[in-house]
Image (cartoon, rainbow, N blue to C red; front, side, top):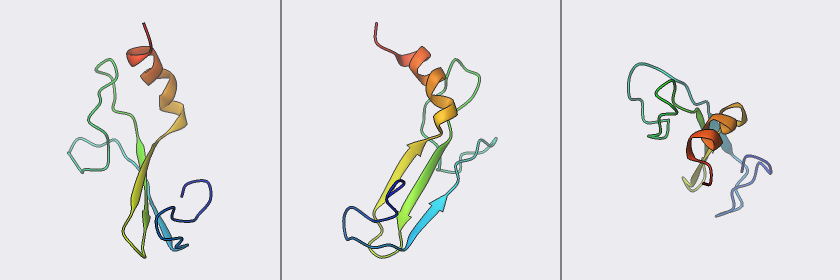
Length: 73
């Protein structure tokens, strides 16, 4: 959905993007992963307004920290 703008489940094109945010409260729109105790990676959610299917994508700028913390041995 992120790249195509089309729901892979129903083919709908009414896609809503919910921006991930880092806050001091648990808002349910972030993965439960702390990176080195510094921050939580942002996850943007894409929701199909036709069928309700959703996907989460980690903000690309957070990927190096995730790879460093959880990369292959």
